[in-house]
Image 1 (spheres, rainbow, N blue to C red):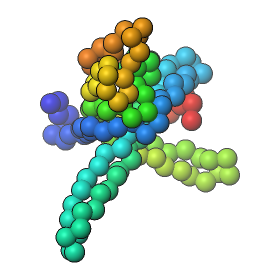
Image 2 (cartoon, rainbow, N blue to C red; image 1 turned 135 degrees about the vertical axis):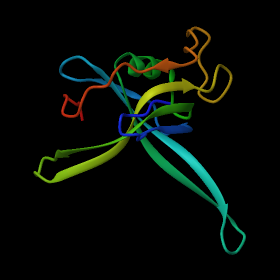
Image 3 (cartoon, rainbow, N blue to C red; image 1 turned 180 degrees about the vertical axis):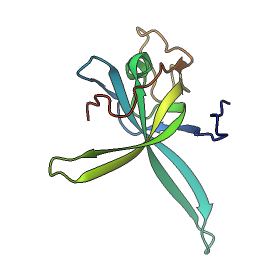
Image 4 (cartoon, one colour; image 1 turned 90 degrees about the vertical axis):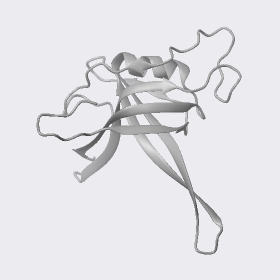
Length: 146
């Protein structure tokens, strides 16, 4: 694991399922960007002993070749492993109000399912690579398509 020069770490690891099909977009400069909504689940027993399920939705963004590869093979319901870093960015909406979002910028993504499972692939498709690594991500302020 890489640490920065000040001894801090920003690392997120998720295993979850896609809540919708991926939608690949391109910035005006031509960089591919893919945003995923990944559900992770936890369960616990409440005070009455009843089981309570909780779903957390996580916004994950990936860029360039990684975005194109994952967009080609991932489908709604696909189970994925994601490693990345947590980021927060801001923008002004159409009414001029400051808006914020927190998301995971993916650096490594692995599809955890193959043919014959939920999110399976047709026999004519090439199976996805077992894992894909991200190229360096653009810095804050680059041209985002959303």
